[in-house]
Length: 457
Image (cartoon, rainbow, N blue to C red):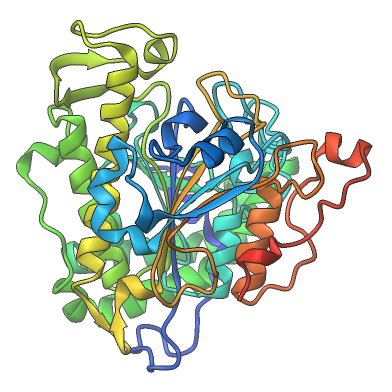
């Protein structure tokens, strides 16, 4: 039986970011098509050499290896093997090297910090310093769910603590398996009676009696009071979801029986494909415009990889170069990245099939794939390579290029905070700088505030 506290945790934890837009579920006008952002977090780093181009000219190769600025057109070069699944979309690709993330947590895990540019203090609630970038982007392009978080971290299932943050000292929730994500996002289609039941519970929790009887005091009570402030928005969302359940039904994803009850027997590629289907369905249905997807962490069990079909691969030992099934660790890490790229390709291909405005849904979508902990298994944050796939209506000028920015400690270097500031500035938030500053840059008195101007407009 679900207690009031459990319900509050699972159903209202991310409520602080909910904003019910006027004309909810209305078809966007041609001039009012929302932008969409998909943040895909991977564990164990992306080594800069793994994402570098193999056929640089001698001059560009020397610059890249010395970590000096370099920029080349991707259409004149061959992609690394693990990225070749995106060959057909090179015009939309940016390989961005040279960003640092030392103001984030590094080594094995970043927890919430890579999304918020602060130190996470090993995932304590009090260390969540600000609203994370994904929730900030969701404020700019409101939707019924505001923001959706998906995760395969630690092999969990159900509704669990997430890594994003709708406000300081507030942890988001996330859907940890495809079946749960489908049931919760499309509950008004699959189980409208449960939505009404949720509204009854929310009504109780919203009352003074509900708060009084919740049995919490001090800081926890204050956090619950913040959550309760958004309950009316959730109730209104639920009512409208039921009213439009007929139109939502056409986007309902179908999942294979293997995914029932958390999918304990589904392989990793099967789980990834199913979660991708749910993600795409939520975007197409207009339930959200921003998704954060922790596609793995060091505790995620990896099964069914091509070349290691019968092994249960551990990402942590892979980071220490342990071989599985006689396959070298570097090759298995590459195969894991290939499986991630397959999901990115599926998202692009399927969104390109959906007309929107004068083009397709992908034209208004940006996908970012990046390491949560820096440049290697024991990341230090001196580099955080990003793979960015951006549609034609992207507000940034960077597609089709390999870009290496000045390295940490050099004039002109850019941090993760500069990148997130660029995203915000380009899409309507004029913030001077997002996130904490880099201490080394501060000691050298280098300017590190603001957006990366070469990517704007």
